[in-house]
Image (cartoon, rainbow, N blue to C red; front, side):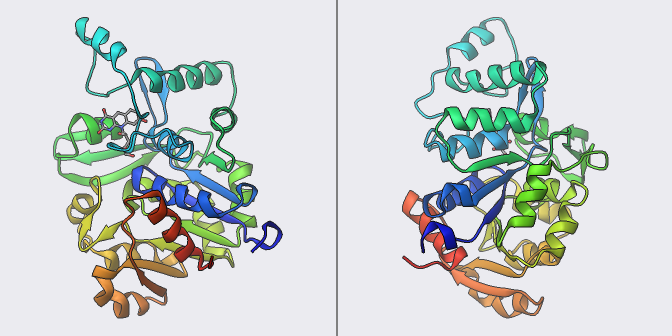
Length: 314
Ligand code: FO1
């Protein structure tokens, strides 16, 4: 396929797993045809810095800068600032590397100067050489707050500080009702020939994006192919709390449970070969099911899965 007849792709992505498929898509889709819509529910203020973990995870991954071991933060990082902070007895539960810190400093300065998160994200990506478009789901604040057996916890407090051990009873997206999708997000979703739901946590990475008013409605009404890759393989999450959260919220912890959760915004569902037995039950939801290897351990795996998802050869 050449660029002119390549379909326009909008991909919803959250943290590490989502960023990998976003990177796979960026390897095969012409940059002007690819828009990644990133979750901002994980965002928080820390040490007076505005931190957007999921946007940064996608940005660093697309720029080839992501820490390959953790998936978040910058590769070949140094930790002198954290060591100096520790000497003062400052907060060290959220690790900020010296190179990563530059992103938070610039984002915070630009936001304080009145630039939108959309503009800031685009500028950081441009300066890192990322050529496809990365958009925050909204320029308005939406914050994932988990109601647990130990009370209400902001997402990073739950995920990092408490290492997602508290038992979750409910997940709220504070600010979602008042938030608006940016015109860039609406335009990307409306123009998309294919909408890809990257294998991110359905409850705390995909749901916050769908919680932004009109986003779910635009996607549900879209005539695009709407394809999700299951983040649950063999009843487990490859990384993070997705399986534990689904269990605590009474969902079936399987690719079928994810398909049921997202079925109203999907046409296709991609599952891993280990979950092939679930195909009939997922198809019974009215979804087109594809069974393939979905675990990405190399850049080539990422591109191959992206090709599989888009069903483009070559
Ligand atoms: N995740 C951790 O488990 N521990 C950390 O110390 C940590 C620091 C961090 C710094 C910047 C950043 O962009 C992400 C960071 N993450 C860390 C990941 C972050 O918690 C994300 O929310 C998860 O990747 C889930 O999306």
